[in-house]
Structures are given as structure tokens and as C-alpha cells.
Amino acid sequence: MSHDAPRVGIGSFRSSIAQAEARWVGRELRRVRPHLKVEYAIFARGASRGPATKELDEALARGAIDVAVHVARHVPLDPVAGTCLAAVPTRELPFDVLIAPAVNSFEELPGGARVGASGAHRRAQLLSQRSDLVVIDAPTDSEECLARVERGELDAVIVPGADLERLGLADRVAEILLSSLFLPAGGQGAIALRVREKDARAREIAGALDDPVARAAVVAELACLRAIGGGPDAPVAAYCEAMGEDLSLEALVSSPDGRRTIRDSEEGTVAEARALGEALARRILDDGGESILRSVASGTHG
Image (cartoon, rainbow, N blue to C red):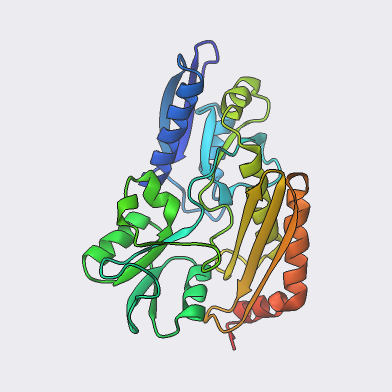
């Protein structure tokens, strides 16, 4: 990308959610810089077992784009491959939502209802609270989840609320599942903007969208989940509520059947975000979370 003209290249993955996020970033950048010209590039996520950010990182490195738009949960906390985290914009709805055409709330779901959910943490929390439901592994694509409900294959689905907001489908929500009911995935509802570390111009442009409080909350969640470990399929979740300079972080580790759950919380400040997450992770692991994760890894969940 030429840096002589007032333009910026924004890269995202191919999914409708990722493209909606990229377009939102473009609109926000033009709002703060009205004369900025924005170009978009779309990348397919490769089948390699490398980092989830790999294709966009490579595009940044070769100068094909100036700003990479990522789902926040995929972004490493430490700098990688000459890139850096330029911004975490103000977060969208961080909670999961229930889509259920026949009822208005989670409580109203009848016994035996077929409820779809992607992510082991969602399925475990569903089973923990409603063992009378038939919990089904659903696609990660929220639009496909809604399509399965429309086709009658599922009675309800639980999906990230931010996905529906970005797709303009918030009117489909039956209930917002607050963290007291369902802890969401770490970083849910947040996006992260990565740039080349040495590209001061891109850092300045993208940095205009940074929300330091949202960044601190996301850092606390991701630090906690990465310190807990267990791999991408482990039933772990975290949510950090930010109130000014104060953070309140909650996290859990559960068995896949929801019968064993370790849930705890910790409070701190924005400046302590990463340490806060790591400290809570250690306590959860020591209190039984490590035993649960060993059972998950070995395939014994009792």
C-alpha cells in the first residue's frame, strides 16, 4: 500500500461477520478522518494448523494491507511477526443470545427442545442448567445456525449477540443471556486491529478507534483463558466487566457434560488487566480446574 495518498487498506476474512466488521472499521475511520480513502481486501482462512491470524499477518507483512481486522479472541497478547495491536474498538454486545421462535426466554424452553450451540463452553453451560434439553453441536457461523432453526432442524440456538448486531438481525433475539446465566467466550463482541509494528501512519490511523477500557477487559479475559489452557475445544469461558478504571473478571472451567464446574472471580484495575487474568486462572486451576481439563483431555468426564 502506498503511504503517499490519504488511503488505508483494510483486510478481513471471507465470512459475512468478518466483512461486516471490516466495513464497520472503515466507516469509523472515515468518521474520524473524513478524507480518508478506504480499500478492502478479503482473504480465505487457510487449512493449515498455524495461527488463526496467519493469512492476515502475511498480508500485513508483504504490504498488501495496512490494517488487519481480527476477532479479538484470536489475537496473541504479545507482538508476533513484526505486527502489533493498534486498537481494540469499543465492544459490541459481549453476551450470548437465544434465538427461539416459539418462546421468549431460556426458562420457557420445553424439556426435550433441540438447542444448538457452537463451542464446548456453551454446550457445557446449557447442560449444567438444563439437563432436560437435547444439546446439539451447531456451526460456528451464526447465519447458518439461524437457517437451521428456520428449517426446523433445531428448536433454538445460542449464538454471540454481537454477530446478530453486526448482521442487522438483532430483531431475531428472544433473550440476551447475561453473564449471570452464561459466561461468554473470552474476547466475545470485540474486534482487534493489527498493523505493521514499524508503520507509524497505520498505527496512528487505526489507533484513533482504540478504547483502552475495552482493550483492558479483553486482555484480562484472554490472559485468563490462555493461562488456563486446555486447547480450543476445552469448556472454558471468561467475561470481564469494566467500570471506569476497575475490572471485575469471572471465569469458569467445566466438564463437557456440565456436571463439574469451577467458577470464580477476581477484581483489579485496568493497569493490572493481564496479571488479573493470570491470577484468576491459577486459582481456578488449583481449585479443581486442572483436574477437569485432564479428564477432558483423556476423554473421561465423570
